[in-house]
Amino acid sequence: GGTGWTAPPMQPWLLGAVKSASEGFFEGRPVGTMGVGGSIPFMAMLGKRFPAAQFMITGVLGPASNAHGPDEFLHMDFVTRVTGCVAEVLAAHHARPPA
Image 1 (cartoon, rainbow, N blue to C red):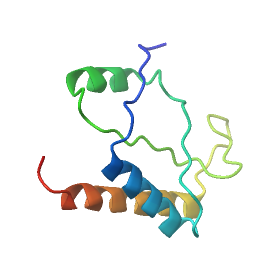
Image 2 (tube, rainbow, N blue to C red):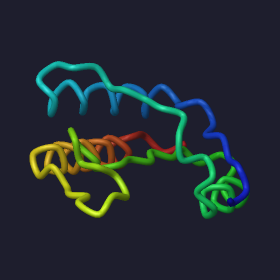
Image 3 (cartoon, one colour):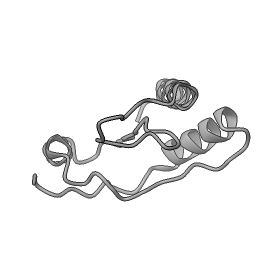
Image 4 (spheres, rainbow, N blue to C red):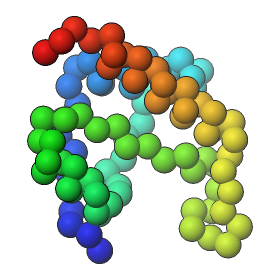
């Protein structure tokens, strides 16, 4: 196990960007969040080094993908949609006015 980590609350621009991306790439469905993966060791390191940073951590395991099993696979439609969401959030970050 690694050092635990808790993400800071999302700033309004990030929350709006992930909501818009999810609704756009997943047929109007709202964004979902889960509090898992907090033991990912480098996230605690990054959070400590960049305490004011916003993080968007994603996974690409889709329906019935059997995570970490011998027959694990990627659901390509899901991967494509998540990739589109990430691109949209990065574009929203770029479009933000300077702090």
